Length: 385
Image 1 (tube, rainbow, N blue to C red):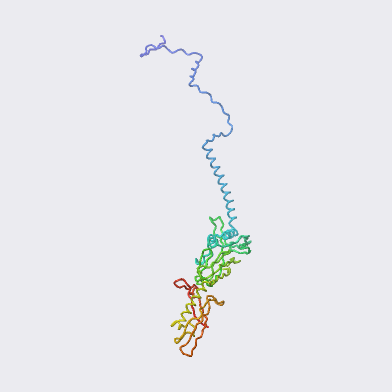
Image 2 (cartoon, rainbow, N blue to C red; image 1 turned 45 degrees about the vertical axis):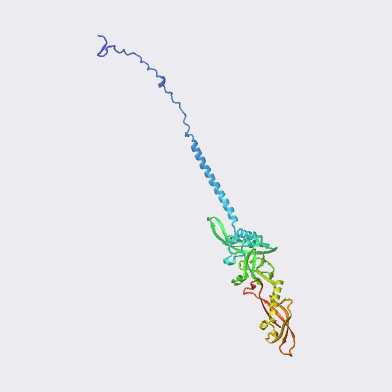
């Protein structure tokens, strides 16, 4: 029987081929299915993945930041050391003295309070110091050896108007700024008191700052307070009948710590001038004429020889021609007048009566001239022997 199968669907199907003695080689793989063999890579330690640009930039920023912080720390430390090197007790005193040397009174007062009431600070101003003809020149500033003490003594050597002097300051440690910067406070302002004595002067000024002598007299102390300098005291409001010359004084300060140091005395003296003498003559003439008339002659200011109601003759023979100021008391002027009188009785003869007339300037309680409505000075005038 033949080796043939029958398939109901496809009909006869030839039989499979007989097996061979040698195997049939497998079909060659298609090119797309060929995989190249892996190349063997020798293992030589840890393998690093290349760093990305973003990581490099981040590390660079960190390094720069660290370096900047280190530099900032060094700069801050150096700056702090330099700052504290300039914030010493002697540096504080020198700064204060430099302000006074430059005439910066307001800044000096703000730096070291003189401890005075407001009504005594009027002459501690920039304008007053600007008017001074000389101010301090700082030569040297030294501090004591107590380096770790909170209380130091600083001594300054200065000149004023060519004269050398020294002054000591107490300086104490103050609260640090930001806890790091040292601060020192000067305890004693460098001021001095100057007494003012005035005669026939009611007001004076220094650098445009004016004060009444009456106000000064009413104060607890008849003195003003000034910073060191050479100052000119100018009499004010003297009017046309008084001459008063300015006075200049060199004001230093205490060598120790006393802020109420006595810096000297200024005497302002007003002198009545020729206009006052002429006014006194007018007043004497007015009284003379009054005493030569009835009933003016009855006034007690007239000579006693003319004080009579029974005179047949009363007249002025000579008027006062000049009034001289007395040397023992200011504001007093004297002259002479002569009257001719005769009584009512027949046996009484004419006679001349010469009498001295005195005119004394009138002033108020503050020493200010009393003037009439026309602005002329007033006098107390009377006759006497």
